[in-house]
Image 1 (cartoon, helix red, strand yellow):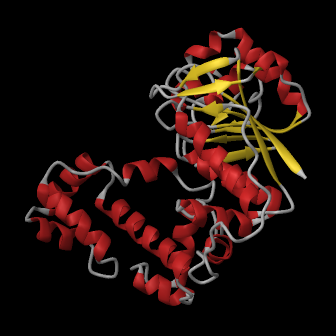
Image 2: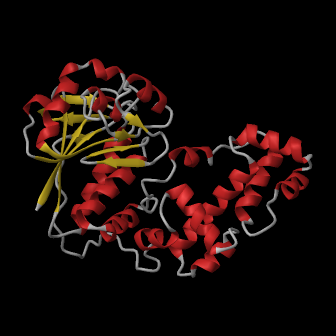
Image 3: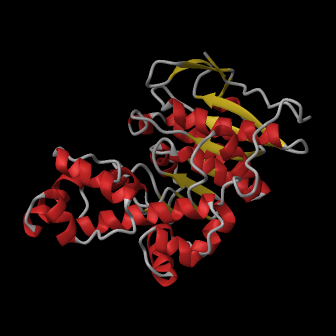
Length: 344
């Protein structure tokens, strides 16, 4: 049985918000011979719709001519999404199709269009962390949470920015067909192994901040490479050649995290990866990641990803231990559905 996915775009949309989820659904169709997804792309008007990077998508069916039933209605985001709230054809078209859809979802700032259509009233929702405060201020009836990668509230899903659309689509496939297929899709696309929705998008972004000072950049690399070492503030300050007070202040200013928070997140990332790619017992994962004891590992996982280490391993362990598979040309499978919007 094919599940119909209708993806709504607009001038200036984020191309990856469309391409990422579409490739997840398309790969699901390749891997699963007995079921799949049929992707349709629509906009207010038929014809060429330019993404913000200049690449155009050709829409064959305008939004006012799309009819239900729809399995998944997905609204993309982009830098121009907030401005498109004044496009009544777009907002009213989304509002019209929502009741004919089994579930409604948005990627990134597409949440603004769902909110404008009244589809997030009384619901918990997320968006790109840079625009979450604006969503919260302009739609007080929406419970905005800027932290998670994605949120499911009833039959409405919202996700964080850009690449989080892939995580959202993997979660939708997992809901439809189980986590094993979602893992296989992640392996086939060579993407991050399906981050749980509770993972913090803000901490993920902040971990990428690179300090201006070379000694602090070297120290970041040292922390990430030596999780089980002495990473106390006194030890790190000595390594950086600074007083403890000056080191803590400068490190926090240049990374957005205190040294202690950075060390914990680094160790948590290493523990997560060990759970994905090894069969080590939890006490060994705790030791090798520098967290020390399984009890600490459990607390850290609940704090950062809102899931226990054991549940994380069962859901997201890579197929190095369970034979990571990708689509094989020799394996018979239903051909992927051809989207009604053609990308040029």
